[in-house]
Image 1: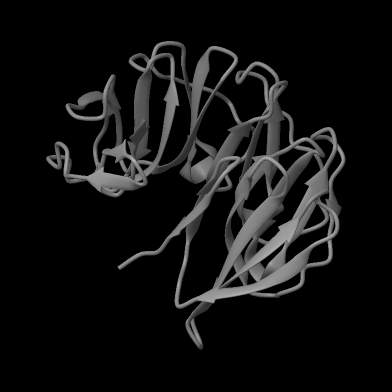
Image 2 (image 1 turned 90 degrees about the vertical axis):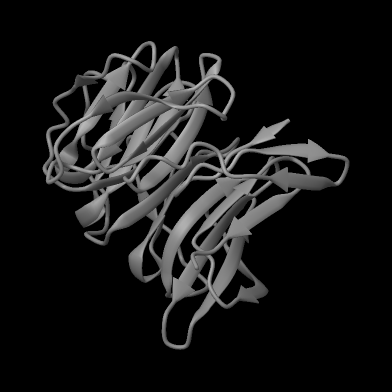
Length: 248
């Protein structure tokens, strides 16, 4: 099993209960923001760059442009396509990870994250922006009950959850109608995942520096699990374990 981190690329091989990590190809000066596996390859995105690798060791620049252009912040794989999102409403689509085509998003808001639900793509960003598409080409912008920054989106058996600034949690069963949920904390949320049985979201506040984890089995009723760290920004999970990471 191969694990991959971004910022610089850190592939690791699972050896029993221990994961061995090592640096791989840290020659890209650009900060990488997100990575996904699909179509037998990794695709990572960041400022002014998209890079790909079939094994996580050697990486190839698939797309790059001059600094000062929009930064890519999230990437997803679904329905045979890669979709990357970023600043100023930027959406790029690729069928092979190599050729990327800009799409009309209908917004100039920065986009932070994107997921594939099995039937549609859902992207989220600034000013309460949620975008949805069934083909990654034609995008709609459903109404949301907030103007806060939305940083992360995840889907589970109950529906779709979006989290963001000031304790904002939104839920939708279909991607079209969104309702704000009551949050147990009011710090900024940075990430949310579905672990197979429940949603897990992580929040962060700087003064005092701390992070909290909240959970929900249905995306509507949330509880604070009373686990806190000095700082955590991202979380991933499978049916067995959840892993949170922090910046230096």
